[in-house]
Length: 389
Image (tube, rainbow, N blue to C red; front, side):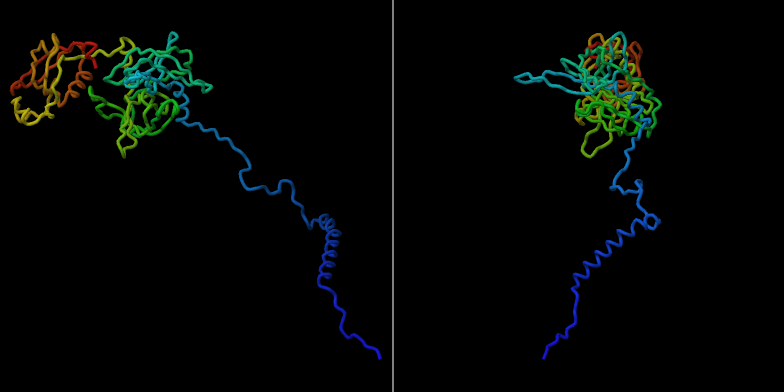
């Protein structure tokens, strides 16, 4: 008696998958060329090959604006000014102060540079640092032709061997608030030489007491002016120097308050410094105790002034043979006006003398002596060099 196995024959799923893959691959190999030739399958061309994300082309843009043109025109004429001073102390080490200057004239093998008086004040040596075309700075010795503390200006002379550009002076009388202003100089020293900052003319005429001698009109700008910019150029978009950067207000919380000497005010000063090394000025020949508004009530009572007199300057003494001495001015006289212009301070008096009068002209002073008002006329003389500020 035989035994039979009634279970059906089964094929492995793995074997079926392998066989199917082989058959599918053969079909693809056989039929793909036919499908490409018939156009059913299209291969990508060279121009259609995808590229990695990012820029595919470098483009050079040539920027040429009025500002860049102006900077290119003037920048080579703006130089560094290095003042070397002998410091106080046991070892007498040298101190160096850096500022800026503007080359404005070139003749007979020499070049002239204008800068601020405070940059070269009390210096033993002054050197000019010129940037050349290959960016190698050239240091040349400078001679001080003249300086004026009152207007904070000085003129230097150098050999013109490395000078390639001379700045052109513009007209500061036609400036308008809001027009572009470009400052070029060396903020914080020669490391940042010929730095360019841009702003506007905040005010073309701002009366400012620049120092203890005089109140003067300055250009106010919001172009950044920092220590080291002193003596540098403030220019317009035509590439003309319209001002000489001189100071900024650096109080905490204050920004954008820089000032420049108007170039039209600087021109006659520069010419005098070239011609004679100083600025001839009229003077009346007095020294002052101070301003009337600074007195206490008790001190004011000693002068016996009427209550209506609130401003004036108090005479301390007169110079020998001076206009004041010849006119009979005395100690404790109070000058309250000059040519009808009220005087509230010594600065007011000097400002009027320097800006509104000339040597040899006659002025009329209103004076109170022992409380009594009188009028005094005197002829102005040229101030001696040691008294010209």
